[in-house]
Image 1 (cartoon, rainbow, N blue to C red):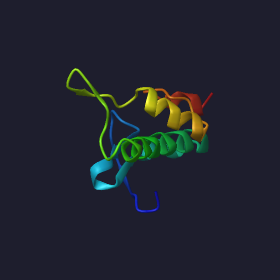
Image 2: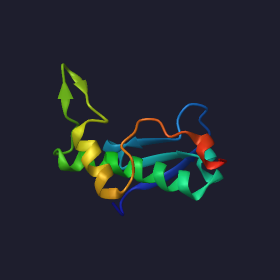
Image 3: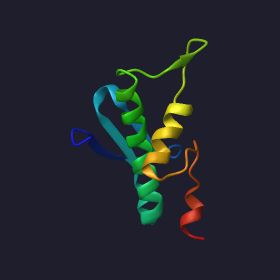
Length: 95
């Protein structure tokens, strides 16, 4: 995954986004509030890239829709030691 480009963004909605076809990850600056949040968000987005590569540079689909957080994603998250969740609460860093 050394080819990945990391960019920072100011998003009110997302903590991170994976642009797998472009080999890019965008991270919201809010994740810098804690290393724990930063670590999980970065690994979450990297997991999408691994998922993409393992599935032959594509996401699995069901009923014509891409499955971004399915069983294959959960397996990668487990390998990386993070929960396979779709929302990472930013307030957990201050608790």
